[in-house]
Image (cartoon, rainbow over all chains, first blue to last red; front, side, top):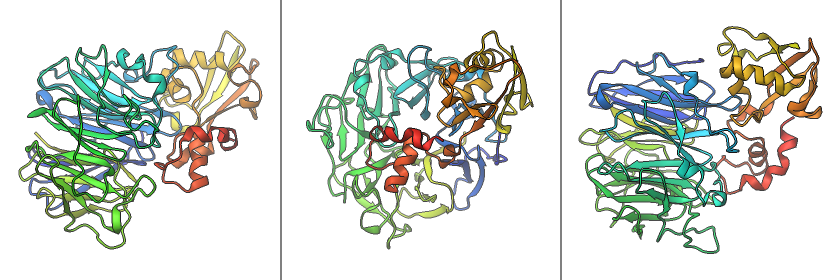
Length: 374
Length: 130
């Protein structure tokens, strides 16, 4: 397998920022002070990487990636040595059932299952569906409740594709899980994935004649905090929302933001009321407003938002941050990281109060995931 | 029937180090040859075709120097001793996955996440894939 990176050798407590781009993946590595960063990569040169995940349940250090070759399709690979080597069991190939009429285009999300189910892994894919593994990723099955969902014929692709990009298992119930797809919106199962109900009440679809349909919304990202799992935050294709009832209802929380259009959204690792977004000017001009790159942070669950721009370029910059390109580590104070379509990766070691450019000159960034090495 | 399948170098690893394969097939079409690959070299096959048996959008297949697109697709007949070439298309290197998306990108200079629905531009597929 082509590989440009040699891997990293972190110590426990170090921080790894996994960066997926349209031309490969990179691993940024720093000690817990997060001052000096080294970079390793590209892994999978020439391949797009939209999903990365470090699974540290039950003592493992499994780094998962989904490189997608524009010619040869997408695959799912795993490294147990932080990128020094990658293995892709061919029988691990993810595939829709024969006769289903759909084929895997891209993996958008790799999600570990609940901590008490350490062999449980989930994938969000394009075209919209979820795959599930109960044997640590050796075999995968499409979730029939989504593959055969009655709404499926009416789901349509957004500009990025018809993708299932967000998976939120309920830490308090193995039967409940929430997903978000674009377009389609938010769906929730309460019976372990057998059936899925649309949960979009209050979320508008600005691009449809009926602004509040049951489903069809273009949800860009949803986050929550495990300590308060029923509370969800949603960045919509126009709209910022919060739900306090697992998606049964949504309220508008776009209070004091320059635009409620955007893609990225990141949850604070310790505070269920603190969320980060990067507003973009509009669907017609998907760049940071006013030529200033600012992260916005709420510390009161969306009651108000404050710009966090110290250290970020503020003069004539037109950056775009995509839906999975912002994430937080789990240290205190929390580190926040995001990447741009222009190939920059920024990081903050003080919860967004100040930022530094960690890396420039990368291919367009498609996902950023941060983790503290256990 | 036995034919020779020439693979791109990028698939050498999946083909156990080879880029020229002698492939036996019971039928007489390109699809029959690929069916043999699917059984014997699934890692190669799934990089050429989807799980539904369709050629991937940026993969071109030639019998000799003839593109099978113009001779029946997977039903194109192949004779014993034929040379089949599997070659990545020039359209696949943009980072955008589908030919029609590539055309949209050129038309409106979009960044790949623009407002146009790719569906509306599917008509351009045949122009970009060659």
